[in-house]
Length: 158
Image (cartoon, rainbow, N blue to C red; front, side, top):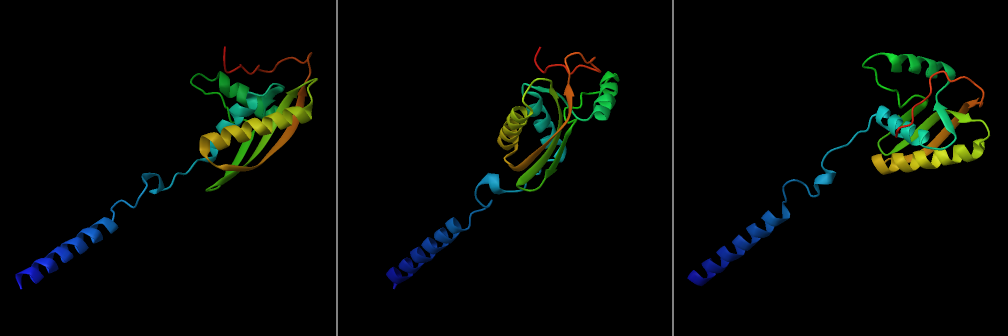
């Protein structure tokens, strides 16, 4: 009888061990525990910087937005509005963007818009993991060579 009791204990211990292995604490991959939310402003900044990197983009935003931005940039302690001219709608897995740009005179607006769209989509998708479903571009002005600068936009790299 001792053999049967020992066998039963070993079987019970094996069953307990296999149950313990099946019940894993923590729920698996740490990357799937919780949610990450990305604010509209974050996507707007990424898109604004990516759009400004395209040759032929003179400025972002309408004339009024640029004027207010120039005043805000002059205030001590103020920061440059990199998201000027960009509006984002961010969902859980997708985003849509509206950009308002000013192009330099002489460039192909279609080519600039295409390059802006490509650069913005690549930057936003790479940095956020969101799918960019659309990038709408409104060209609000053309910078003529003889026009006086309101407030020149500084290049990011000097």
